[in-house]
Amino acid sequence: MSSRVSRRIAAITESATLAVDAKAKALKAAGRPVIGFGAGEPDFPTPGYIVEAAIEACSDPRWHRYTPAGGLPELKEAIAAKTLRDSGLEVGAAQVLVTNGGKQALYNAFATLLDPGDEVLLPAPYWTTYPESIRLAGGIPVEVMTDETSGYRATVEQLEAARTERTKMLVFVSPSNPTGAVYSPAEVQAIGEWALEHGLWVVTDEIYEHLVYGDAEFSSMPVLVPGLADRCVVVNGVAKTYAMTGWRVGWMIGPADIVKAATNLQSHATSNVANVSQVAALAAVSGDLSAVAEMRTAFDRRRVLMAGMLDAIPGVACPLPEGAFYVYPSVRDLVGRSLGGVPIESSAHLAGLILDEAEVAVVPGEAFGTPGYLRLSYATSDADITEGVTRMAGLLSRVE
Image (cartoon, rainbow, N blue to C red; front, side, top):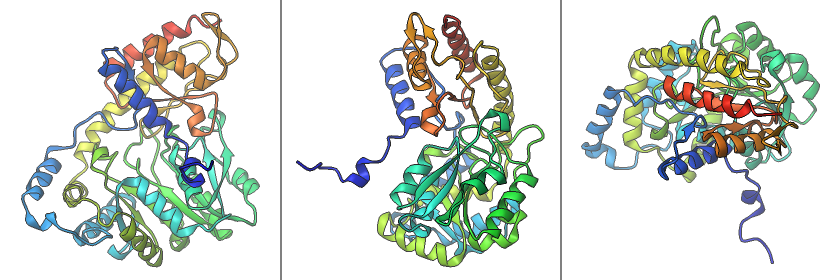
């Protein structure tokens, strides 16, 4: 008997990050004192002026009806202005497509650019959604492995070694989810020039552009390599910068012909993004960056706290991240040993033990293409970080 679900959809792997977060919330709702480090969202409320703009929009009949599938014209203009202000990339409104979050922007980009069999270079560790969206669009993700010894940054040499005649695209992410790695301007430029030389498309995810710490510096590839602009799609959104994960507003920026084609796709998929959310996003991108500065200060403090506590646990090696709001410690020295007489079979198995026995939710590295690691988000309170990592340390001290 044939499956009721198509092979294409059945092949999609469940989002491990959402699954871990859902399980942690369910346990918490059941009365368990679970501390969740799984979710990739700020623990701050959306700034008040943005919420007020949305409240006003709810009462305005203009926003009760369909609007252009590609986004409100005034929001597209504001996104173009914000992009010039924040990264130095100059684009017109016709090069902007407003989407239902960054995920839809990514899928639109892959579906618009990839033909069946096209290979996409994907540095690992990678965010869980990239390979699934690439495969749905008919592409073939080609993993380029990195680890903590290189700061989780891929080199031109590694990318060139993975390139074949079927390679069409590179996915580039800095700052990185899940590792917090930030490429230097020189590294960004070198990779961009390599992609341009070989005629590759680049999809660059800039959603964490404002969350960099210490001496790290965000760089936009099409700004450093202007010749690449005609073969580059930039993905961004309001979720991380303005604590608006639930509002579902992202965008893609690219050559006008690609954006026009992606807009046609979106017109058949979802039509316009919810108008109230778009009005809220307009207030966000038109305003200043004081809210993100406040969040960045808190995240900076928390990353040092969490990374330091984890790195002090025997068998755990945790580099200090330079961006986003994640740490990505190696637990490879713990895999193969035993905890309370139970062999630790993998980092996924270890993550399950940590949830069951320490009541702390973390995401295993298997979800990001690199077994032997854990991802923890420090977008939570200092008290939860201290308590949660202390619980983990107590549990892992029993590893033999």
